[in-house]
Image 1 (cartoon, rainbow, N blue to C red):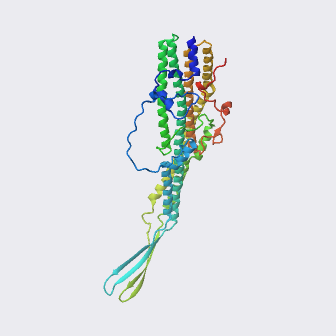
Image 2: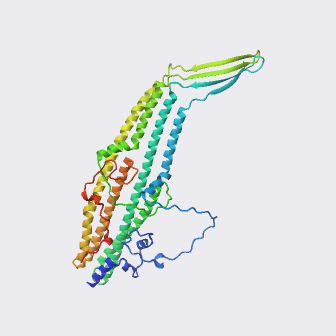
Image 3: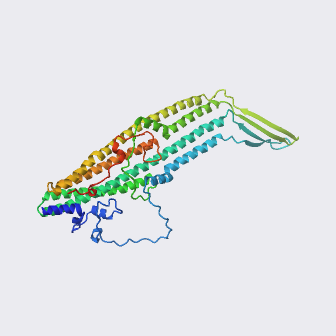
Amino acid sequence: MVMLWTGLALLLAVPGRAAEQGQPQSVARRLLIADPGPLLAPATASVPATDAEVGPVLPPLPVQSQPLRPERPAAPSPRTLEEFSVRAIESHPQMRSARAAVEQARGQAVQARLYPNPVLAGSSPQMAGTDSQWNGFVSQEFITAGKLKLSQQAALRDVQRAEYELIRARFDVLTGVRMAFYDLLVSQRRLEIFKLLYDISNRSYEIGKQLAAAGEETRADTLFWSIERDRAEVRLINSTVNIETERRELAAAMGLPMADVGEIEGDLFQLLPNFDLKELQRAVIARNANPRAAEAGIARAQWTLERSVVEPIPNVTLMGGYQRQVGPPQDQGLVEVMLSVPLFDRNQGTIRSARAGIATARAELRTIEIELADQTAKAVNDYRQARRLAEWYQELILPKARETVRVTQLLYSQGELTFLRLLEAQRILTETELAYVDAQRARWNGAVEIADLLQLEEFPPTFDSPAATELEFLNERQGPLPGLIPEQMPPPAG
């Protein structure tokens, strides 16, 4: 029984002490020591690394001499979602391409209104002898029926469409950044929990070895905790690798794949509103840039039809000139008027095609509205389910798991439960915390999708966002319960 109380003291009061007594440090332990910056200060007690743990110091590799270059001061790594969003809008190639497309459309609109250039010409019907003649003339085509204005109006609708596509590209970039940001934020939280889980498993293994040596536990119990420690070590290593990968994904979402991304800051448990489905569908169709771009396509098709109708009206080409005859000297004036007669080609096929183009553009608008309504319904469904699951963990499951650990600690301190039951309760609480964090990931992914459909500049959504409604639970406005994990829980009273 003395060994049991000694083991309890080691477990609850002195983290990592047993691992220091002559036991080689594992890979996961080195990760805990070498990881820069405290992610979960109360959860781990770092131990100074010895030379045996770190390994022998290798001599530096030879470096080829290179001319010195002035180093640019490194820009501070962004940490908040707003900082990542600003950099993405400034540097992402998708934004540059969309801006260039707008400028290209504007140039085509300017070109559509330009008048044809005059034509200057000179000739000699007779170049030698006394009857030589020399002339020069200028001709100009006059555009009739307002064709240039109609052409420019059609081109201006292309400008509008390109501007709406620029807005669409902006929110595509912002959505990618927001998704990657909250995925990384969730992974940071999971790493904290995995570190704690490994620390608990490692200390449980060491204490189990001591109790087995004292005859209080069996060899099978020690092997069980060894397996638990190895499983926790693998999960910790994989979580560390996953964070590095998601940092690179966040940098790529900014359009700067080589940018440095460190630890980020954000509130994973921030309160988010609920949304009314029908009102949200109306708001999405009214605010989203895709229907507006389709409406610009309808307007362009209508202006194209107007332009096609006046195309048969002939343009007038006027030519005037002067001719000089050498001998006998004679001055002559030249005048010519030309126009085409719409006898056979009255642009019938183009007019018919333009009318069909209007019908196609209107059908495209309706299709986009239906697709947006369907996407909104699916996004709201996923968001509501994720919110409800997170609320279920917050309101019911986590409080029970935390209370179970408190009761188990109290009963164990009174000798009524075994050491195995206490550690099992702590492991269940840690796994419940992980499931709660996964529910938060799904909740934020749904919020990002809804913000993308609504094209919200400010994120996260607030209760003032379009179609936002009150929450179902009265105590939700108090905010989520703090994300306590076993090492942060107060000891049992008594």
